[in-house]
Image (cartoon, protein in one colour):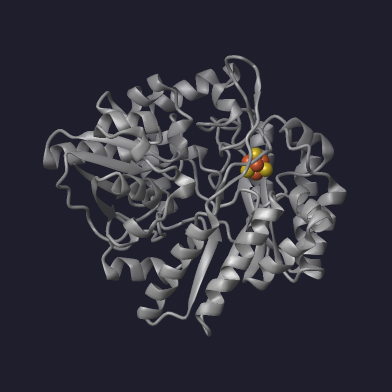
Length: 462
Ligand code: SF4
């Protein structure tokens, strides 16, 4: 059975020319699993070149809520160009939608491609033929790519699948993490699950060989871990594996970076400092700490109580002074129901201090209390706002964490104004990497939407 898997163009890419090129690792993971199960899979990346559809089954990778309107349009275009298809949609955002929302948005011939039971039914394969993600090598997918495409990916930073899952439960977060079951009220604990280290090593070795054939002398990898230091014993094994790959390729450099909580960093420093040291020796140079606001009350309100002012300051200092890493201040703030002028100003001040004292890199983002998959998406408090977005699907774009606060995401005008002010101020700090975008909301007319689309063009997040 044949399947076309598509990485749609980035939602802020211009209509023509190169889009935002970034290796679609999650698409390659599901693609490799299906290739291993015997399917004939072809990959298309519309950021690089237009798709050529030949299969009856077509799958899309959505990298967040703003892709929802893009994929809805893409489905219609493909139907017009190539006739009726069976569509599959995948990516974390899809798991956040309930079945009726999924059907409302994408129609009844579109399936949830994240669900193994659905995949086995749609493709008539035995569930035992689907290797678990963490035991999957991506080489079957890499081998299906043309050299010119692979070279484009390897010349830029890309995501390396190392682990999935986070034990914490921050309110605004839609990642695979600990959560409260909305039906039973029970807490479902999630643990970080590592991918098989030998498979990671073999895959990275394959990519290094490919890169060398293209005349490249380094790979820049963004680890997929939601919290790099959460499982220090596994992290140490990973660090050694990366060191081994480097040893086998003298003169070739592997650069690594990733996200972390200050809590896990401090625990790792206490219990197994070698995991941090060896990771740095393996090429890890930058750690993105999830600071996500400031003051005890704000963190408590957004269920990020594992942060404290003291711990954040210690981790930022220690990452730089004790381990020679560059700290990034990942600041998801402007929490609609928790922030005040004092806390927003404090978040700004601490970021400024970290830049001056430790050469930190600011990465400001705007908290959105409801996005598919987070707690707010299931809360009755946001029912009306969610309905308005489901009716005006282009407004899913306003849920992007780089989008300015809007009347939909920040209904209180005072908080909206303050969150906008401090977010924009933070975007002006030296070294800032966030390109803020404007929001599309249901109340905008066509002319205003066109202006927003124009403004947002090419403003990709890192
Ligand atoms: S924001 Fe970070 S620490 Fe919090 S649940 Fe999400 S991944 Fe875990």
